[in-house]
Length: 407
Image (cartoon, rainbow, N blue to C red):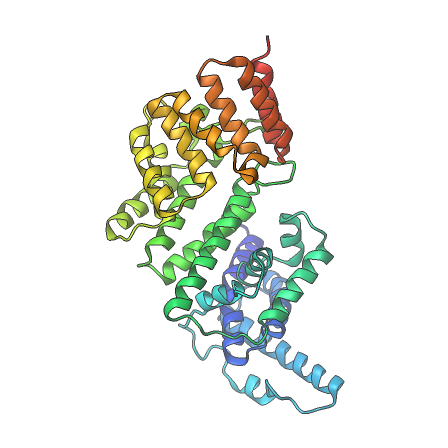
């Protein structure tokens, strides 16, 4: 690992810890976040030139605190009135590393997933404040101009500026934790298969989602759904080396070279979900991880234990019913009972207007029609799926499938 990369990784790890301390001490999320960003920029330059300080966390905390004081003084001068919420003396009086063992990352994650924020704003603020990505990086990940993303993040910070930590007990804790898990899963899935760009994947987003979920799991090691989500991410991301052909088009799971899967991630994810499931109660992330484990542990596609996959989907549909779950279950039904049984379920799902607008329903229908030996309808369904796909590589892959059935 290069020195530059080591500094970058360390800054990303320390950023939420330092921001958490400032927000807990002083509130004013937006001012604290700006101060931490300035401290990170200073550190990136000075540490790369001079080497790491003896206490990197304390160094960042001291510099960020001073930047916060500068901000408060500037506001004070501009408004020509006394400080109200964050006295300078209070900021400077607190030793930079007075509580070195306390990690506020969980509270910070909860704050970034505040109920008052929209879904996109939660994701953006989480990536910026907890993930340590710059506004430009977050904007690039979501294919929007940096100015647009800056406005979105600024509005989000204004919304939560005085919320502070708290509300992490009882029913509110469970609700906020569900929101945090949902945001982390959205970030991961966007990285796993991007919705609108030239590449199939955005590995930086997947990596960041896994890193944040690892952090959350370390803070809440006994939470089954946090462990389930982490296992699901690890088992899914293990396929990444075999998911794309040299030209960037996706390679379906049955056709992947399983020797190219990341065995370390497979073993870690499988061990985690195996250890977690018996604890109960079982939630949707644990069930999805269990399904991924069954697929991943099969030595070949033909050796997949489809009856077990179907049983898990039956349970998942009872625990967390959704059109996407029903569509995936239709594939399992087809593999156990035959393609016509799966196609009957897909036909029922075509009444769901939201699902019918996506390319996935048509791609599944095409695959099952092909398995049933109906080349003409399968070709038409592949073309319809290609027409609706937003990812260029997926569109190319589906078009190739249709052309293969021509004649």
